[in-house]
Image (cartoon, rainbow, N blue to C red; front, top):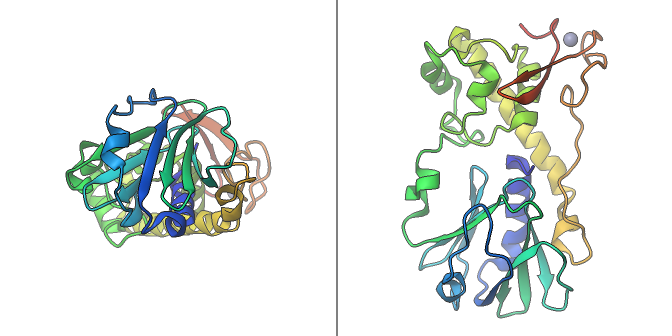
Amino acid sequence: MPELPEVETICRGIAPHIMGQTINQVLVRQPSLRWMISDTLAEDLMGLTIKSVTRRGKYLLLATDQGTLLVHLGMSGSLRIVTTAQEVGKHDHVDIIFTNGIVLRYNDPRRFGAMLWTVEAATEHKLLKELGPEPLSEACNGELLFQRSRKRKVPIKSFIMDSHIVVGVGNIYANEALFMAGLLPTRHAGTIALDDYQRLVECIRVVLRHAIEQGGTTLRDFVNESGKAGYFQQQLQVYGRAGLPCVSCEQPLQETRLANRTTVFCCVCQK
Ligand SMILES: [Zn+2]
């Protein structure tokens, strides 16, 4: 599943190719994504110029002076920059074709993604309005998480994965950040002290920044025509390592399920 670092990497990867480019045609081969793509999308986008390409949570925002196209990659979506000469593959559901012949091609085998056009301010869109702060921004800090967690009995891992609290901390990164911060994933959010939250926020940032840096090296894979769209592999300390020795104390890592998500931790290093 594309997580915040992948979406950020895709955002940085496609931006230079489509910024300032004018949309000539939109081909929707399969409108049935998580929500049906509007019948008028092609008409709405025709002739518009991309002014900016940004990210909010796991949404990509392609802004024009008439409105914004919100793109979410769902469980299995990807975007590639190709040309009209590039053969259309299975699951290539949407092409946004620019006047210079460049194509932004959306592929999504499981079709849980979304492509929505809005003429209101993107930040006011119902899918974005209630989102918590960006983890890499100053708006997200230990103080805020501490305040919002008081009296909460939800496990800390579920708390930081709640997009109303902070966006973009997916399962892998929640596992990694809690290990780095030395906090047990099962602890109730309300029992964690301010200085622990301050450390946790720093760990979330380190883990996400590291993943974004690693993603940068794979950029070429999805922006060129032959590249197979894929999510990057990375070096993880706990996720996917249950039963293997902890990198710090060498005790075997434990695995449990929290909110139905795989949770791996070290019961020695995490308190
Ligand atoms: Zn350990």
